[in-house]
Image 1 (cartoon, rainbow, N blue to C red):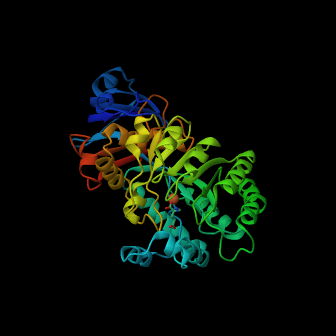
Image 2: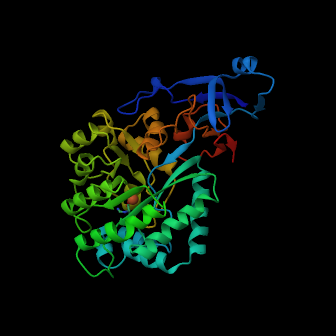
Image 3: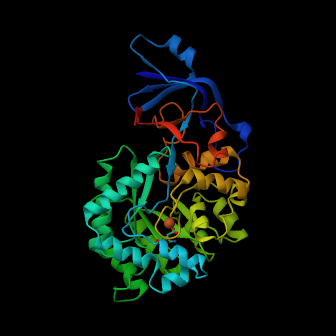
Length: 408
Ligand code: NIG
Ligand code: FE
């Protein structure tokens, strides 16, 4: 066992509920805090001196230097960080007046990333992926969801998921893979959308399962991509095969957020265009609503109505959506801080959204709080006040990251 501290402030998040709005006076702040760790789990949190005085001689006491605060490390529950190539020209074209969907229709967009990703070798892609994971670790993010979706055929979707599996052997971060073969019907597929979705069900998902490559399935439901009814039947079949469901929903047009909640998806992500009645419907469901401010910032579109969702009782998570097209920035802390200023989110709501609420969207229920028997994943900052993390909008760098009780 080891005891780490003393921390000027320990923000535990342990008493916060899974859903709904939060006020900052609900935050538990332990001054002079200590974290007692056994193997990879939190054994106890509390006053450092009290824990130290009760501790057996065998407990290793690790004193941290200078004034630091600690809180659960972050979870990014929605990324597309495995990709080849670059879409800076899409960004420039959008800023010169073309829309995201127009650029996609003209051969840019997701399809151009598919071509680049198919082209690059496994080694090249793995190296780029590990670099992006490193960037996220440096922000204090210890759990990262990663989607496929730039392969779009058996060979290349499996190639992507196998690279993610290999990356897991080379990083201390916890990686959660998701099969997003339904990102787009690829231009070289001969058949209708429905044919392509059936091809995913018959040819891709059984192999994903067999190779234990992902337990989650995602789809992009949107006007020029997959339609609600064909998507519903696809998702229900994927669910029957034992996959958890997540949906790219209501990014530009509404309707699919409600669909996601109706079929019991773990999360409905984006929701920038969700209409008021559907906000209410999603908020009362078990489906996590995931705001992706990085996509709003990358596209110059409105933000997910996070305030309304929380007020209506939703489980609100915040993800980066880091991808080469709509969300090239990748800095979840900057994005969450900016979302807070526009949507008027409390610090407690933002911290919950990038810790245990995001973990819940990934089906991880012992991650994201400093609480007994939770995984000992936490991040420290050299500052005397935790409010500085969001106040600095991402420019306050973390000091140390601990994953499974070990300093990274
Ligand atoms: O979440 N909306 C669909 N998928 C991604 C964008 C992927 C891309 O443009 O390459 C998103 O925004
Ligand atoms: Fe996305």
